[in-house]
Image (cartoon, each protein chain N blue to C red):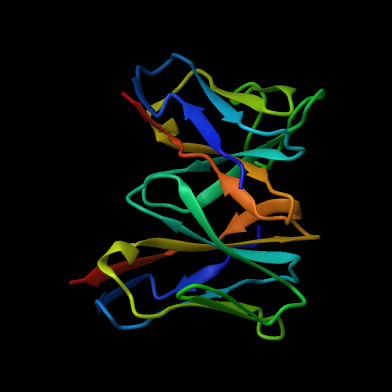
Length: 113
Length: 113
């Protein structure tokens, strides 16, 4: 399976600021996604990070709030903009393996004060 | 959106006992995947089962899929304290989009020594 790293692993931020989360994969992957896990909840898909084009967002998520970059097949960033306490969550990137399994990064735990 | 429902929400057993978790979903699926999450960390991929498969094994894990009932089960045999975690099922379908995972509500498993 692919080795996925995320930075930062956790952060505490003030409301109104923005945080950019990085996701690095040790091999080229076609499909990469970003998910959110709110406290005590399950995971929800935010968007598909498309290489060379704009990300595809799920219902309830917009580019102005969660801009995503995917400059190549091994790297992506998710920015959480103009944060509020409701954005406190774990943010995870994922990639799809050759056999169709979806593997997740270790997550970024964000707390917004 | 489609979401898997898992039961039980929480399960407490002794080491050596078997643990069974169930997942139900609403529409026809491509694949169903099971994950483990320890204490809010990243997700560990356990097993992928395709819609045309009925059973898969991996070590102490056994997954079954009944597409007529739109349900799956995860059996952990001879449980260990280290199996204590939350377990999630996740599905993708033509309805949600290829590889766009929709997660179940999760089962919290506690294995006591």
